[in-house]
Structures are given as C-alpha cells and as structure tokens.
Amino acid sequence: MSSPSSDSPARDDAAALNAEIRAFLSARRDRALTREERAEYEALRARWVEAVRAGLGTAA
Image 1: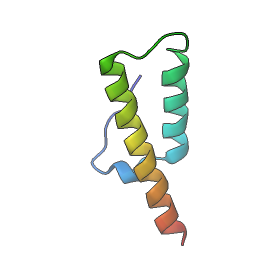
Image 2: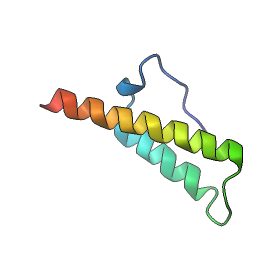
Image 3: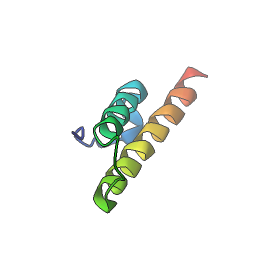
Image 4: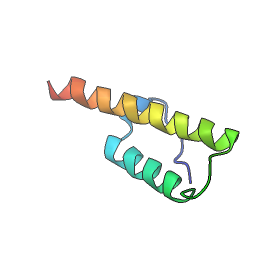
C-alpha cells in the first residue's frame, strides 16, 4: 500500500502521507510490525517529516 517514491520527498503532500501512515498501521492494528514493515513505516514517516518541514518553509 505504499505510494510510489518521488524524486523529492519534500514535495509529497503531508496530509496524504499521514493518511497513508494511518492506513498502514490500521491494517496491522492487533500485532507487532515485522522488521520489514517497521522499515516501511519508518520510510513513510521520514517522508512525512520532510513534507511537513517543506510546508513550513514555504508557508513563511
């Protein structure tokens, strides 16, 4: 359920990434993440952080 990676993660929409992270975690609600799933979650989260930071930089 991953979105395609882009050339610039900062261009990703923070709200869309947030929704993707929520869906990812909801699908795995009653169990611990596997090592691979944890890596995927961390990658999504890193892209979200970059998108938020990019949004703050352009809003100022």
